[in-house]
Length: 203
Image (cartoon, rainbow, N blue to C red; front, side):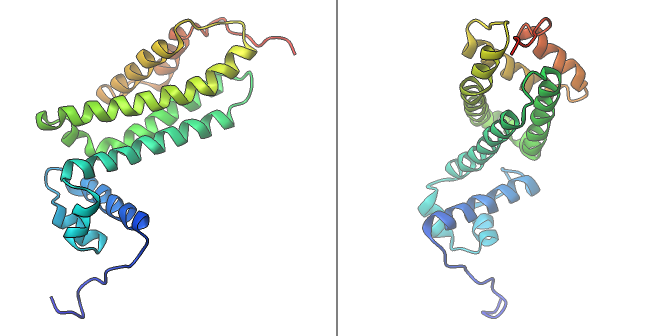
């Protein structure tokens, strides 16, 4: 490859450069898998020297962690958006929208599914899932649950533990049995949170 045909390396602030490297890794992991993506591949896709990749991410595991953290951040952002868009008192719509949100973000991670389920990546997947569930539960507990408790007569005991079990269960069921209908997931959430008889307090 001549100097004229080599990809030009972009100059940018350190945090932007790190984001570009993570984005390049995310694209390549989705296209060809984690196991088949090298640090050299990521450097070439990002248009940077391989040494710069190692400067920000000491090894490939650190780079994979950074990619997965991006998925977690997007999931939490979606929860915030869902909570902000909820119609007070409209539990049915909130549940349907919530399940749709879960489906969307599980699909976004699906290109990495096979790699994450390989024996050598079991620990990595478990760390990712734990971070995702923990972040989502903290978000829901601080927003949705508080607002729900203030408006409805139904009360949930052991809130964090209940949501941990519920979110872990939904993720596991939706990923391992993707054919399960959304209506089934909505029913499970209703039962787990005792929403069958929920009604808004008078205003």
